[in-house]
Length: 165
Image (cartoon, rainbow, N blue to C red; front, side, top):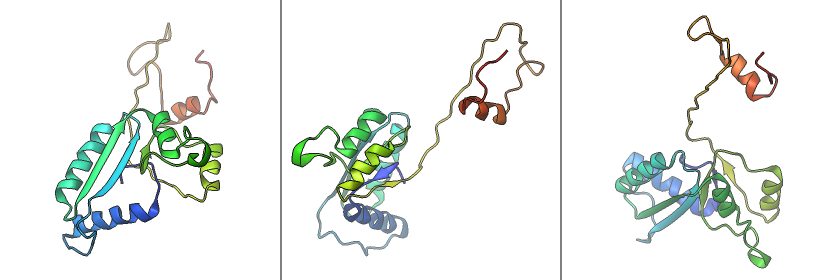
């Protein structure tokens, strides 16, 4: 959908139902006229996409829904989603309903969050492109130069290739 992880399944199931209503054009979702507020935060990379999807969703749903997203960065989005800055009885009480990030939630944070009896769902939703630049003296430009295939690139990212010489 538009988030990498979601909390409060009880609340989110209404959003999913509202999405079905918007897509199907029927009015089987009943919220007794209450506005369903869904708040999120996280990575800045897909923020424009998220805001556009939220606007379209709010315009097209037949039920009152208010969606917000703060582009504050992956780490801050995770902390706000997990509630890790909270202490005492509020520890791991999330500040928002969903988060988005370029990095996965660590095993320790996932386990601590799950230990509170809450569940989360990780959903891939958008891909971001990256560019690879190189400056290797003596390597020509063009087709006779560096042959950077997808396999070679994956080996670089997996740190199997560490030196270019």
